[in-house]
Image 1: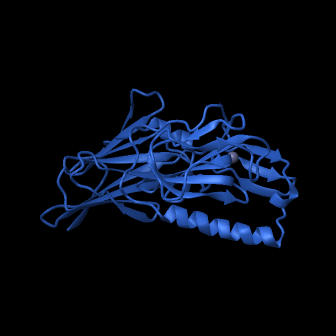
Image 2 (image 1 turned 135 degrees about the vertical axis):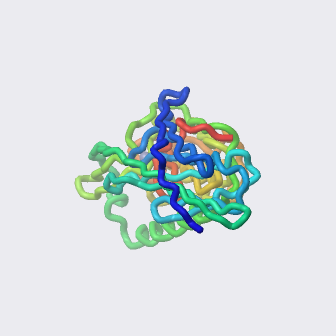
Image 3 (image 1 turned 90 degrees about the vertical axis):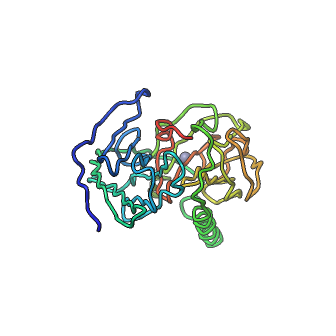
Length: 294
Ligand SMILES: [Zn+2]
């Protein structure tokens, strides 16, 4: 029998050792979860750890209309990642955890998350006209790029491939420009789905954590681009590289050089565009530094 164990307002908000990590626990003696994030706001990554039960037949997390299994029940602290869509209007999001016990009974736990309001900056930029008004040939290329990226994001494994906490992929000036609304050449408006790290051409670009290369090729807008799959639906994206030093399908370690900073594609100068997606929802990659990983 499925029962909703209403959040017994045990939603204890605690501030962890790291100033920027918001932790909350919800549940009771039967089903209990720990949530961690930088903040409950658009474009933020959430880590949900199942604390109880320790023994189950199946446990799933539902968030924003999608459901994913917690996977290996032998893992002492199984976790999943989710992202708050950066461009959806603020609302109350719901985490729903459903557990099926060994005797077949089920319990569910609902955790409401009030999403804070966020405003993103606006910026006007000038680029080559081919990036605003692409000709027929470029339009065909853009269409192929979209398909390649989609295939890369879908080529994900649930198994976690990271090792420990994430690192910044390059040294340099870190832009606070995630979610920025951009007006290119006074006409095209687009949203910035990552952050820009200002660095000299040739600066090494490193894997932010362990993963598999699911895309390593030149794209019309992204220029020379690498996408890594870290497991559990999480990808990191590295764009505008001057050189790519890894091949599709390769396993990479945290800190391994993927390529070097450049200005290929739709770039106004040398920098690394660093993106992060969780199950194809773009999140601010800086939000990953509030979370700890096994
Ligand atoms: Zn960028």
